[in-house]
Length: 90
Image (cartoon, rainbow, N blue to C red; front, side, top):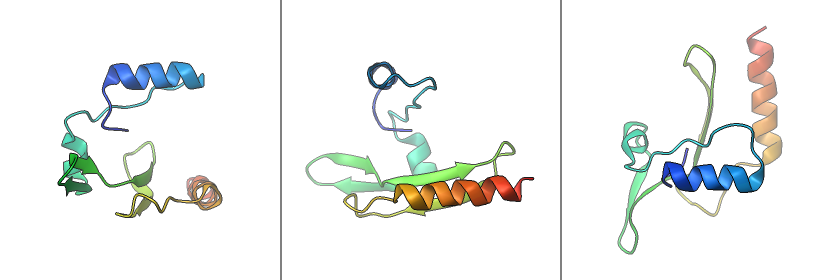
């Protein structure tokens, strides 16, 4: 989910050849609900980078939030969290 418009997300998905939709939170409504919005003097309201793994029942199985946009979740850690979450669902 990104703050970009649905049109921008659709174009990005097409450019990347994705077979799933990219979700838009253009007005930051969900970002506010998750409590991960911050104020930038130069750019206004922005989402804090975050990753959530959610199961089919809507339960959050894993989350990672870091207000420092330069620090991102490693691919290895995300894949390990997804693997553990999948095994827990068996």
